[in-house]
Image 1 (cartoon, rainbow, N blue to C red):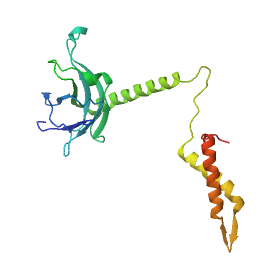
Image 2 (cartoon, one colour; image 1 turned 90 degrees about the vertical axis):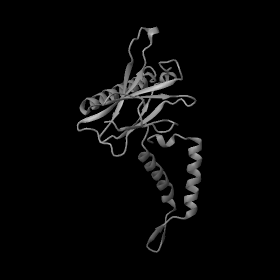
Image 3 (cartoon, rainbow, N blue to C red; image 1 turned 180 degrees about the horizontal axis):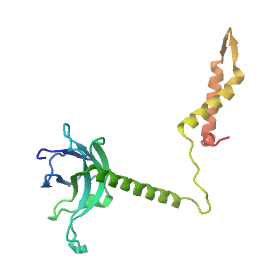
Image 4 (cartoon, rainbow, N blue to C red; image 1 turned 135 degrees about the vertical axis):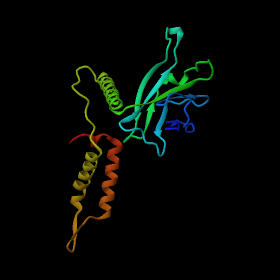
Length: 214
C-alpha cells in the first residue's frame, strides 16, 4: 500500500493525496494546516483505480494531540465514519474546537486526521452506532422544544399533499366556469387568471392555510 489510496478535500482548500505520516502500511495521518482558511468539513474519497483489500474499509478519525496541561500523555482519537466499497466517498463535519488545534511544535493551527484500513464489518458496526447516537441526540433536542403538556409536534404536510391541495382548490374554483365547445369541455382563461389572483392573495394573507387539513 505504498501508493496513495485516499484523497482529502478540506472545504475551500486544494485536494490532498499524500499523507503526512504512514505509521503502518494500513494507517495514514494527515496534518492539515488551517492557516487563513479554517474549515469545518472535509471530503474523503478513494482515489481512482484504488480497491481496498477484500472485506476491509477505511475508518476515519479526528486525532487530538496530547495536552500535558490536562494530564494527557497520548493522542486521543474520535471516530468520524468510514469509506469503502459501496461508499467510496463521504463528507465529514469536524467539531468547532478542532479548527484551532495548535500543532505539537507550537506552530500554526492544524487539523489532524487519521485513516486506518480495518475490518469492514467492524467499521460498518461503528458507523451504525454513530448514526444511532446522532439520532438519539437529535430526538432529545427536538423533545426539549416541545412546550410542557404538549402531546406531540404537528407533522408538516408533504410536498405531494400540498400539491394535491392546490389542485383541489383550483378544481373547486374553476369547475363553476366550465362550458362546452362541441364535444370538448373548456374553461375560459380569464377564469384561471381570476383563480390565480385570488389564490395568491389568500397565500399572502394566510400563508399556512394549505397546511391545514380543512
